[in-house]
Amino acid sequence: MAASVSIFCSSVSGTSSALPRVRRLHIDEARKSVPENDGRPHPWVGAVVVKDGKVLGTAHRGEVPGNHAEFVALERNLADVAVAEATVYTTLEPCTTRNPPKIPCVDGLIERRVARVVIGILDPDERIRGKGQRKLSNAGIETSLFPHDLAMEVEELNREFTRFCEQQTLNVSLSAKTPTADEDQSSWPDVILECQWPSLVHESRIPGSHIVRRRPWMLRYRGPGSVYNGCVHRIDFGEYEALFPRRVPTLTDTASVHPIICHKSDGLVITAHDLESLIHNPPSGCDVHQYAVETEGNEDQEVPLKAFVLEVEIPVTISYEDKNGNQFKIRYLLHYDTYMEKGEMIRIGRIEKIAPI
Image 1 (cartoon, rainbow, N blue to C red):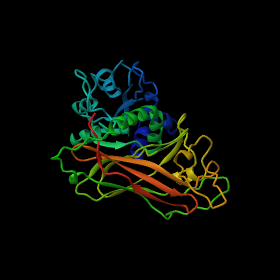
Image 2: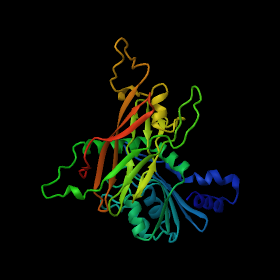
Image 3: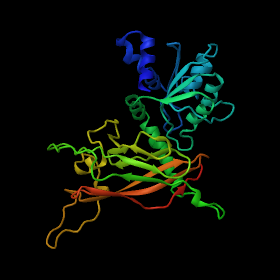
Image 4: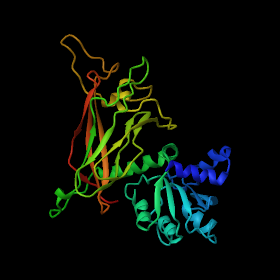
């Protein structure tokens, strides 16, 4: 995937010095986005259309008020240009629904017979996440994702919109859909979240630094067929948050996911590569104490929790979809003992079916 983007860049620019600028063209367009004035966050989206090694056109969300980047690129900027067999780079997964008479971006891409769509990040709105990519694939259009470094930049650019979408989903899904009497819950797909102990990678401790273990978190599915768009939801740590930016588009067995710890205000990633690092040595403003477990000391000694967190219990939520687009979630609790440096992932609820919005 990264190689294909590099080939695109070099064929357009022809010189290595121009490579970084061209490689970032879609993100530069996204930064020009003009949000609607309705008081809520909107995504920053840029689109670039490339054919035969040449950039045919670019666009950004709101370039034409109220319209998406892909629509503007294809239907306004390139309305009279042959884009069949072109590659479209877009920082956000193309939409699958729009209020009439507007046309969903996915339908426009299919109608214009593009050959390939390269996506920065999947839509953080759980109602439609992955559906655009799936519809393109079903239409015979090749899809792929941005390389990791560019995807992280798109995630950072859209962090406010992502946070808004996840909060909207949480507000609705806190009261999960009550199954009807004739609904067979035994058929609901079950995904297991695991975190492996002991460490798979041992690294020496450096005084004053975070303890970096890079311990993998695993999503595991043992049912028939597949589940889709599996993800671990973000975890709040005051001025910081743990993100799991790499969703699993299709899960048939196991897949690893890794948290990224970043500062909320600017998206700056800190040196911790897992939650244990954060718990052991939280930076200033990182609220780990909110998850501290009440711990009793010895008979004549009290444990100063404000100075050192002995145990934490951190709520963790995963979500995923079945082949019919039904959405599910499961709640877990990460219990971690900082003294023993051991933990376990405890399942604290049944599978919940998320009510459609």
